[in-house]
Amino acid sequence: MQEQEPHRYSPALRTWFARLPRGRKIILVVFLIWFAQALPKWTAAITADGELAARIMKIFVTPR
Image (cartoon, rainbow, N blue to C red; front, side, top):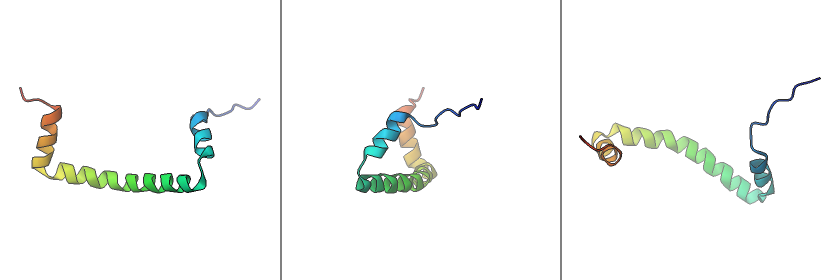
């Protein structure tokens, strides 16, 4: 008897994506590719500038 691999993705997500029109699938894929490329650039830009990073950290971490 062969063992089956568990599904990596939710069946609901797969059916939702399959029901999307072709144009929306293309837009979603292009957006995801853009986001994957932009995220490291944004992270580097925010953390490279000491002043902006300090302002952002003040929001989340209060000084003692």
